[in-house]
Image (tube, one colour):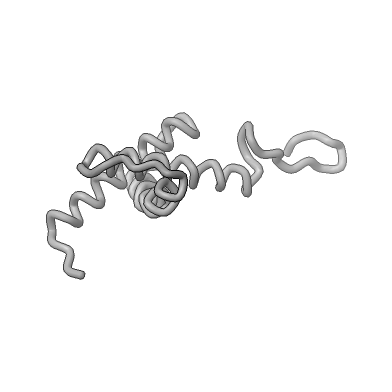
Length: 101
């Protein structure tokens, strides 16, 4: 597989937009430039794997790529939040006193 400069730029831009959108939806803010790109690209893999299994086909084009990657990134962030135990969905950690630390 040969990636051209244009395809690499599209991957980075789609990852950046998707990661930023997912960060806004799940957390309320972004994760910085590198964090948004990483979350968006990993989210694109998750969305590309998950959505067809759910019977969801978004079509083709840049907008569908962004939506696909954003949905996958949201799933990724929710899973991370559940595993890490932070936020409204997770429990957090309590000490002996029963107070949140």
